[in-house]
Image 1 (cartoon, helix red, strand yellow):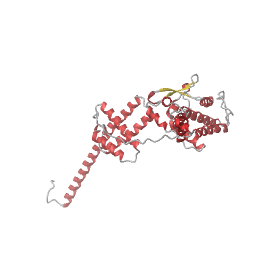
Image 2 (spheres, rainbow, N blue to C red):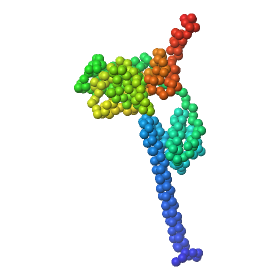
Image 3 (cartoon, one colour):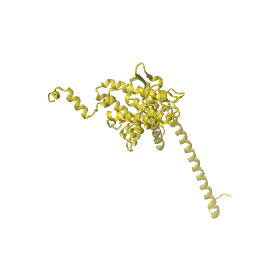
Image 4 (tube, rainbow, N blue to C red):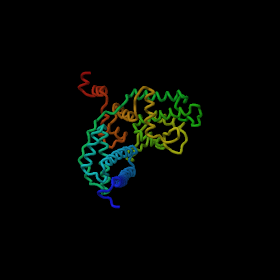
Length: 359
């Protein structure tokens, strides 16, 4: 039977139902096809992001930098997906729109600058593969980063921090002197707590006494303590190795830790209670708790900043400080010329001939 004009209402209703059903089926098929296309596109540019991160890891970029790039890539690729685009469509207009999108958010200027730098690096990677135009991200300006002064503690506060850690170890039952011949066979009831306190002191001595980054402390191995030279071998950023001197008090704390350090397969100097190498989050937590014990709010980089600042205040050459900290550029080290007003006045009054005349 052919439906047409003049057919009974029941047949007209059935025809409408069939037409409506066909329409919904077609719409559902179209949606599934669109999702499959989006999924394929998403998988494609996710693979490109993964390839970019893998290339960074092959270059032995620091884990901290890799984590930052991975986070930035996740945000960039998610934004592209929301825009209905993929990485192959990163042209100049799209890169500028993404930079504007970042500027409209709540991120700090330094964070925005880092994310734009990550995007430029990704564009460079895609350009090498012939996916996008090499100049797609050229000319994009980033916000000026505020040149904030590093957070430092005074020399007296540094001594208080170290003394507090030492006293905490003694209260736990460690021998009255931090003797290097202390045996690992010690089995006192407070052994675990003593281990943590001695490890804490050695960690603080290395961070403050040698001005190391937290990642550098985590990568230290027992063989990196060169006793014949009174130096530590530091494996820094970009696979750069440098030698850093240490003070007698630092070696004393290291020896105390080695005497009670748990046996482990790894040769890393600093271990967790489970005999695994410390990671940077462990170091941050240990430093924060040690500071809280003596009424100080500090983080790991505060100790590095403090080491450099105290060296500067006591007359160390800026080039020597640059070498000790492992800075590639002297301009990075120049931030430590922000020494206290009192120190500047004392240096001026003690050195300038005009000031000496009025003394």
